[in-house]
Amino acid sequence: MNKQTSVYERCKSEIYRIGWRVQYRARKIRSQECSFYDNPPTGSDFAVSSEEKVWVRQLIDTLPPQGKAIIDKLYFQDLTEAEIARQLNISQQGVNKWKQKMIRELSRTVKF
Image (cartoon, rainbow, N blue to C red; front, side):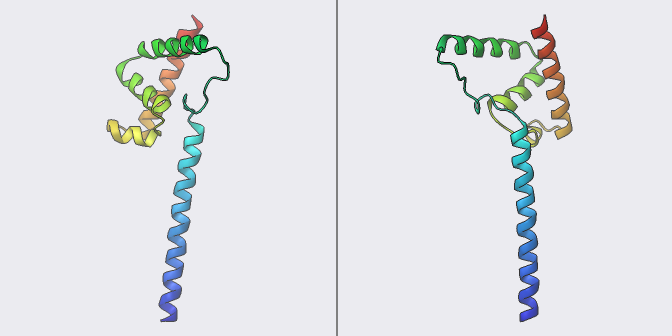
């Protein structure tokens, strides 16, 4: 009975460690992905912040449909790359590549 208890405790401990690692990685990934809702504008001028939101939305609307959906889900709906990959039936790496490509495209658009 004692040996079974120790095996049980070791398994329980290992499962707990695995669960903690998974949660830690998920938190780490989420903290690297910036959400527009996490950082509300600090200025008190409502008109300026509203204009900025409209401008950002107009910029995002210029993107291709797939890229627009990914950017919207990442930054406005606050989903992780893994969640988006499952929803769109593509790989997480595919989501990451789309994200990088769309950010570069937005950067190019803003520079002109």
